[in-house]
Amino acid sequence: MHQQIAERLTAWQGQQLRDLPWREEPAGARDPYTVWVSEVMAQQTRLSVVAAYFSRWMERFPTLVSLAGADRQEVLKLWEGLGYYSRARNLHKAAQIVVLKFDGRLPQTRAELITLPGIGEYTAGAILSLAFGQHEPLLDGNAKRVISRLWDIDARIDLRSTENRLWRLSRKMVEAASAPGAMNEGLMELGALVCRRRSPLCDSCPVQSYCLAHERGVQELRPVRAPSQKVPHVEFVAAIIWEDVPGQSRVLISQRPEKGLLGGLWSFPNGAREPEEEDSQASVRRAVDQNLGVEVKVGERVATVEHAFTHFRMTLDAFHARITAGKPQAVGAADWCWTTLDEIEKLPFPVPDRKIIAALREFA
Ligand code: SF4
Image (cartoon, rainbow, N blue to C red):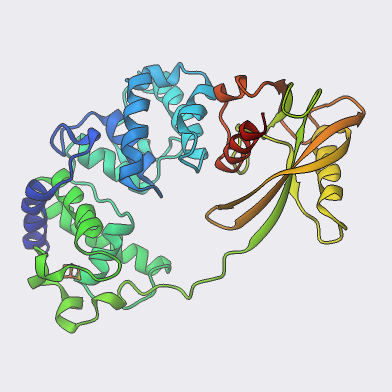
């Protein structure tokens, strides 16, 4: 059965694959660097969004060696808006390690690949099968859904035992495949296009006759998910500290510490509101003091920005501000500088700060 499913997925992949810039070569014989970058970009991100980022990235960093020699800020700038910035930092770090330890070529074993920052079991499987044509399994969200339905797995998907079982089944399929790269890609693509989370298109499915969940009419109940938890909401404040008159001079930005959320990116000095603080202005004063060790006078509100991260939603209120005492120092920030609204374009910022910059341009 593994072999029949593998062959059908391979044949289907040959006919149905979406045209994307990293798929110019056949699966199993692609450039390993291309596979690596595209797979890392595609994690948690829609492929239609990834395509434009990928093309820009490849224009600027066409080879692993060119990425290894790049400036970290430029790497983050090219990633700006894609989110999960540790992915970009890890790509950069891993490229440098590959140049130092592996002569600039990605290694061809799972054991070596997963020693590199940001390369886990999934990405290793993608590189080994899609670039080197090896019979190595992979498991992304789409592949997990398809396998859970094919074998009608009724255990919760978040359990380690279920994960192990899914890996075993994925391995059996790829080991039975004549073209492992095409089979793996077909498996993921089937999950994206046909075996969708809601309303799977079973009548167009090449493996319907092998699908236990379809036979039992329970496909929409697979995979079995953990009960969903409410995403917390956090209120943040940010200070737009002007050197002179608001909108007409330089503004202060700080760089986030390398480790942690949005590490290495620039932002307007900010912090979460504390419950005991009487108003947003008090929160701004405290946040600026913690980041830069200065006192500020807080002025009018510039913008209110809503944004959803994976683990929380934020509402960010940004206020004009002026320093009234002290000289800025990188207390809670990695660095800081004065910049103009024109120069600011050269630096990488998270999406909420980009929205603030857009609001500032309306003022200017
Ligand atoms: Fe998914 Fe339906 Fe195909 Fe089963 S038959 S693998 S549920 S699309």
